[in-house]
Length: 193
Image (cartoon, rainbow, N blue to C red; front, side, top):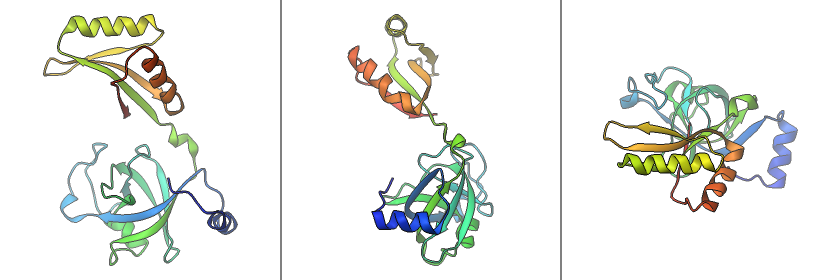
């Protein structure tokens, strides 16, 4: 998240009510060939709806996007992941981009605001290992249980058993990773739910 200078922060505080979460950066928009395709949350993308893609915000988060160049704003729902271009923080649907008058420029400097922190209950899954040998997977699961964890085993269609620690609150993820490291388990994969 971009850091504010003291003057910028004071201007934001004086000119607008405080939001529970705020981010500043560059917005872009998408539509055209993506219309009708599936979004990351499994919906069909409709470029005429007020939706957006964000890298981290939970799906269905409601976000106010303010175009800093003209002061226009739009409220969108996060239903996709992206943008995947460095320096951009949100990808708006065509309809949302029209609302804040950024179609012609393609990008715009924006402020994102989320007012309800309850929708930011971000959770993670830690994959501890992936095993073709079931005995190795069972041994890791038992080792984790012996150290106070509640692991789960999942089997994919290629015969790989994954040992995971599911549904970990964001603020506990670092502590989990440290506990695993102390057990000598360092090659983990952390994924947002």
